[in-house]
Amino acid sequence: MGKEACMTCDFVIHYVMPKLTLHIPVELVATAKIEAANRHVSVSKLVSDFFTTLAAHKSANDTPRHQLAPRTRRLAGCIPEQDVGREEYIDHLERKHS
Image (cartoon, rainbow, N blue to C red; front, side, top):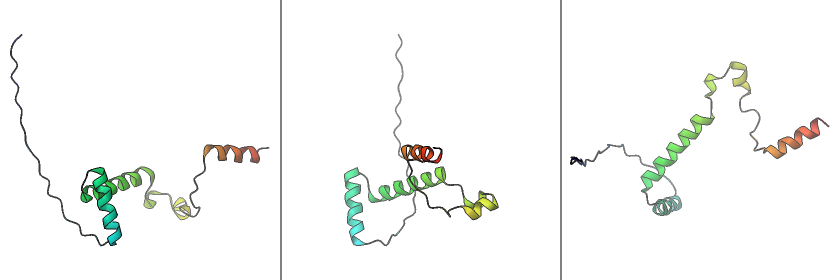
């Protein structure tokens, strides 16, 4: 067996991120700091993660209204969303078809 050469390169990439000023109630600032400390992250990271999650959820679940057909676009949102589980739906079908 021959000796293998191993090189280790350590480098740091610095990203320049713009600053954002938020105006929020003092109580919410305290809550954000506590939550960030509990998660061992900065408040900036907490807020960034929140908006990343929010954007991912929205893009995964929502079709932009402008991409809907005209008739569908007019109807979109006129019926409030309901959280109906499988059992409730089965009950509904049984009542409907009995």
